[in-house]
Amino acid sequence: MRATRAVWVALAVAAVAALVVSTGGFGAGTVERPVDISVADDHHAPVSIWDPGARGDAANPLDYRRTPPVRGRDTVTVLVVADRLDAPLTLRVRNRTGSPVAVTGGPTRVPAGSAVRLDARVDCRGRDGTTRVPLTLTADGDVGVSARVRTNATVACADDANRTTASRSRPSPRDRDGESAT
View (cartoon, rainbow, N blue to C red):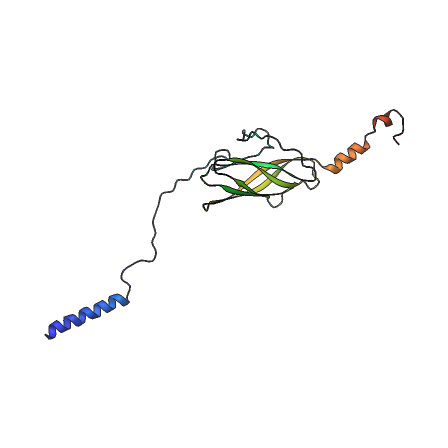
C-alpha cells in the first residue's frame, strides 16, 4: 500500500508541476512565405500617375493634356491619378524640400477603378516659364493601403510682374500715331 501511495503522491506532484511550469507551448515563431514583387512603370502601377504638363507623356485615361499657366498662386491640375486597386483612395500632394515651386493639394477622393485630375494650389514664387517640380504623392486607402510616391510634375509659370511691365511698356495704337492717350 505504501508503494501505491507513493505512486499517487508522485503523480500528484507531477500534475501540480505541470500546471505551474510551461506546458511546452511557444510564444513566437518564424515562418517563411514566398513573396512576389514586380515593378511597373507609373502608367501601369496599382496607383497610376501621369503628368499632364509633360510633353510626350503617355495618354492618360482622362485625355487631359495641358494645365493653364500659373499666375501668382493658382489652383491647377498637377497630376492625373488612376486607382487600379479594389478600394477607394484619398490623395494628397506636396512639393519636396528644395522645390523651386510650392505645391499643396488634397485631399482628393478617387473611387476604386477610376481616374481623377489632382488639383493643387501652386505658388510659382516669381518664376517664369516651364518648371519641373519634385512632388511627394500620398495615397491612403480605406482597407489599410498606404503609399508615398516621389514623382515630378511640369508646371507652366507666368510671372504676372514680368507680363504687366511688358504690357505697360508697349505703346498704345494712339501713342504710335503721335496722339496723346489722355
